[in-house]
Image (cartoon, rainbow, N blue to C red; front, side):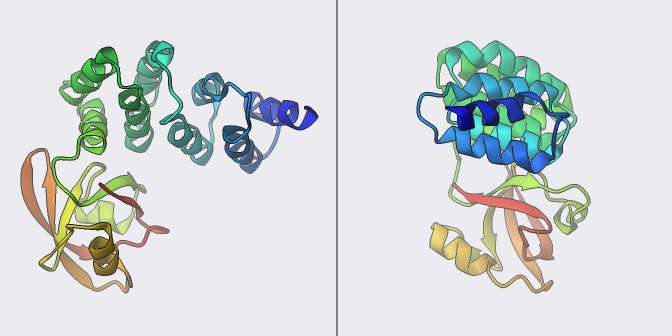
Length: 212
């Protein structure tokens, strides 16, 4: 109907209105029957400039990418290689396709000589094939306290002050009540166990965590 047409128009004209309208259109169209949404996300990911809208497109595309989208995703990862949040979520979309080709490309990225692409590939591999249970850093805001403390996208937090994250409930309880007090974290990164001391994460300030 007219509403669907207006939403599609908003997504395909990134210079014609406020960014929040395009984000709202993307979420609305995702749950609208009869709309082939993946091409719209791919179009927007190539042309959109607002970082929050781009992130929404990449996040929503993860479960909707198709095998025929692999070449476009491959190109978009290189386009957004300078943004680890974007590149990582695009590679999650690639991995979610679940074909031999998408899995091969994902592992190829994780072994890239380009450190930016390699980090994004390693993150996407951990998200798809978690080597342990824990809280995965799935988005890290530039300049945040966690970034200054040395945390990276793709870090898998295994424990906080000795409390092992063996379930989402335990992780949530250990991480609730951010008050700026430093805590001791055990982190899995690149096959190595590291230890960091940092304040408890505050999603609105530092980034986002996902239990895997």
